Length: 409
Image 1 (tube, helix red, strand yellow):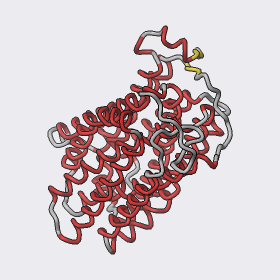
Image 2 (cartoon, one colour; image 1 turned 90 degrees about the vertical axis):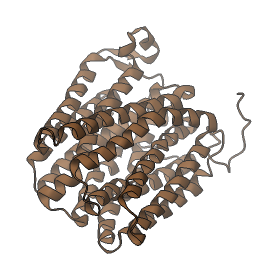
Image 3 (tube, helix red, strand yellow; image 1 turned 90 degrees about the horizontal axis):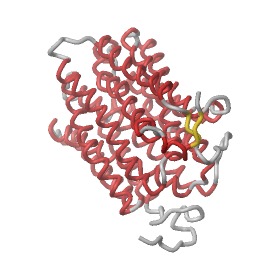
Image 4 (cartoon, helix red, strand yellow; image 1 turned 30 degrees about the horizontal axis):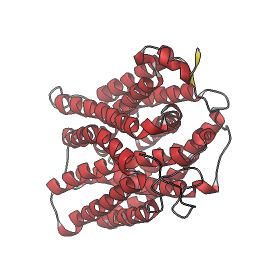
């Protein structure tokens, strides 16, 4: 296992450098995860007769590993972050591949837990590596490209489902095996084809909680709570209320990620030009309107076209979440990135552990009320985002800190 200082990576072939590795991993993860997501609602309803209660419990179980993402700090005492990321990606792929082998409530919850460990630990480490390996000046643009590449991989997975699901009468087992297997193979390639890159700033290998990061922690908490409602109930609504079949849900996802693939790089440039505060303000205002409109679908009987349109717009707004990463990169001590990524992932998932299960019961009584609650969370996030300064930096993490001079353009 060759260890190479990050500064020496420029001597490698272009495809073997750190940023292309980030691109490749960003491509590999959604192949398994997007396929799992596209099939999930139909799979659990058709195979296991899930209602809103069971789907809420499934997503609660799925988010438990996210809550314990802080365990990454203990694991990197014994293995390199890059190795941990690849191993977690492999675990996600293998678990996705065997999902259809466990068609009962207990089996689905168990395999979901295993795939979720892979997903959340990969995402924690991947976020840390991105902020360590990408220069601050290039971060918004490159993170936008990473989001776009991930959306492209999802688009590929969804496109294949739309074209082949009914045409070849595919089974859940075949699709899960194929998608999870591809992700697992790419993870093995990433392990053997790339050297181990050594970032210039050693990471602190213990839990880090700093008072000056409080606004970042608060934004992460609200982001996790708000996103759970979208992830759990927006797609479930399309199946339960409007009777979407697998290929129709997948077509909606395909449109989603085509839009993200096109707009994410542009959003990266917008964040670089206008700053994190304006980008996040735009996101949260938009999400508030979208969630209120979701509630209107139930209260006023608005139709499927509006619901599908809102779902796509919702997803585009969520793509701006990488502005939180660049905000943290600007205010953080370089050695804090890995441990804080783990802590932030845990904070992001505090609400995720209990919110889906509780809202599953509210869903039975008032689906519209679930989305009004999400709108309230978006408004709270908006108030927090307005506390981000125009030019974040260490010592100037919020608008309440001593103002700094604006950097030269």
